[in-house]
Image (cartoon, rainbow, N blue to C red; front, top):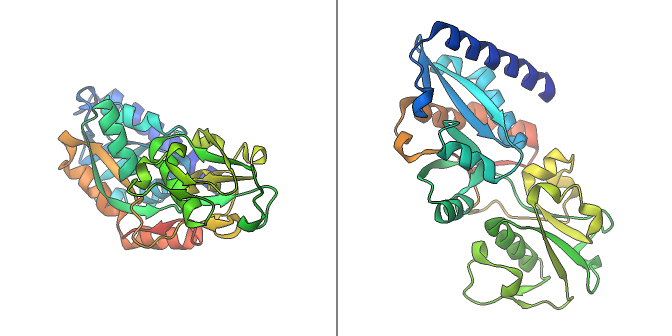
Length: 282
């Protein structure tokens, strides 16, 4: 079944489930910002970005959730700041889209009380180009697109440094690096910070752009085949994980969902579906 078909069928099922709960007036705790339990089945509202997070959650919903007493109400979001805000405000019970450095930045900037589970997968950041076939072809003064959110911006600069295009100041943490922390820029690259979701759509505006794996997949770019360079998956700190409100960190249903995301079935799904563009982190 295609991704679109899976999402359409699930959305219909989630809508019917919501109507049933409303009609029955059961043990609905959604007003308190927590999971909803009805008749031994707990409905969890989960916000996620489309690829691969929504696909992985859809696989869990269709193949594993029912046996665990769960029903997933999946809410697709396309912009990074939104899922944490929704979670903090109690609009959803969990989100699945981010790595720990990004979450830590969000907590520091917004005062969120959010807690992550262990990493599920890694999406290697890649350097892409519409016009070049090798990093060696990058010319003097070339425009380089990088994400504008703090952690992915630093991560992008670290990848460019690993490919020999620049060096960063000594002692700077990659997650904190900005273009001002570039110590050497031998090709006088012009770093342009763009919303991460827009980089694939504006790739033609740059000689090269550093793109998150999930946004590359959404744009039909294969990180494994199309990227001029990819992050290594070894000891990568950027594993994406399920995140919940700190008050719900021991909620039985949310713990079950996290266990399902770390199951052998999910590992196999990731390996079979993404051909190295997404890597299991467990």
